[in-house]
Image 1 (spheres, rainbow, N blue to C red):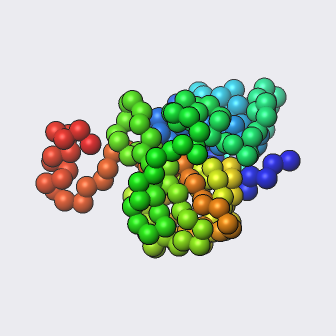
Image 2: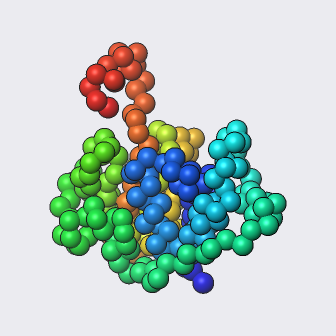
Length: 218
Ligand SMILES: [Zn+2]
């Protein structure tokens, strides 16, 4: 029985299992898996049966019951890897996130970006600065209405927030794409701390930006 209510999309879990996610998003999904037996099982199932099926099939929008259908067709009993001890009180201690944080989440150095809003970019090799970061929303703070450019994964590490989708608490993962606009508001007495991975590369709106992009390393 898990208290996690919001999970990655089936396609995101399939991409994770097939190694198709960039590192930043893979870190967020892997940290969620450490807290969620259901998604750990789903990834394990994809790894057992999904590999060649996914690679030989054209990418399509997957139905919510796609995993069950694949498993029924393949008649497979998957090896289930259940996290040893999902630690919802200190999710950042799960690998691989713990390897990126130099110490406790309480020692993170925050940079204020707006009233009630701070962030901390997680330094790591192999991807663009800012692709993986922590965001802290002070209690009662409502973020301005915004949409997302490209796919973005947000995992709650501390506290809670609510938005147009529903209530998000520790372990919940919001799997958002560019079509979605929302206004999250921190709930409760403690700050809400989220781990966020934004899909790389940046999408520039101007022609000059697109031409310069390969040369400036973004
Ligand atoms: Zn899950």
